[in-house]
Length: 116
Length: 115
Image 1 (cartoon, chains in turn yellow, orange):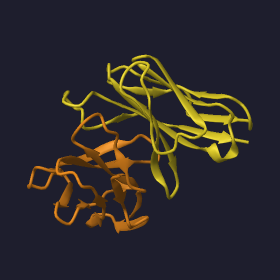
Image 2 (cartoon, each protein chain N blue to C red; image 1 turned 180 degrees about the vertical axis):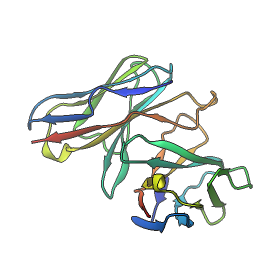
Image 3 (cartoon, rainbow over the protein chains, first blue to last red; image 1 turned 90 degrees about the vertical axis):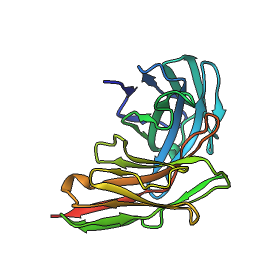
Image 4 (cartoon, each protein chain N blue to C red; image 1 turned 45 degrees about the vertical axis):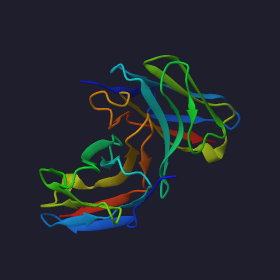
C-alpha cells in the first residue's frame, strides 16, 4: 500500500528550539507539500516542492523553511519554535501534472506539534 | 488568487438521512478540478469525490454525490443514507488544471451523525 509517512504523530517542543518535521513517501512522487491545519482556518499551505532541491513558498512561509535533498523526503524546519506554531502539520505528495493520479494528493496522518 | 469558502462550520444529520455540505469558490480559470476530502478522527485525509470542471455531469461515488454549478461557482456535497462512520471534517478543495499548482482548501465543515 502506497504511503506518506510522517515521523511523529505527536511532538512537544520548547520555545526557541529548532524543530524538524519529517515526511517520507514511497510512491516516487515529484510533488510534495506541507500544510498547517488549525481549527476554523482549514489547511494553509506552508511550502511545496516540485523536485529535489526545489522549493516554493506557500501562503504562510514565515518562520518555516524546508529541505528536499532526496525525492522521497521533504522536511519542514521550524528555525526557532514559537507558541503560535502549535498546530497540526500535514504532509502530502502527488505525481506531476499529466501523470496518472496527478490531480489528487496522498496525505500523511499528520504531526500534532505543541510548543511550550 | 483562488479562494474556497465553506459557509457551514458545523452540520449534523440523523443516521440514514441525507445532508448537503456547501462549497463555493472563486477563480478566473476555466479548467480546474474540485474535490471533497474527509478527515475522520484518525486524522487521515481521504479523497471522497472529484469533479473535473469540463464535465457537465455531476460526479457520484456510492452514497456521495456533488451538485456542480460552474456558472455559480458552487460545488456542494450530498451524503445519502448517512452512517455513523461519515462523522468527520469535510474539506472542499480546488486545483487549477495547469502547472504543478497546489490544492487550495476551504476551512472545513464538521459533520456529526446522530444515531
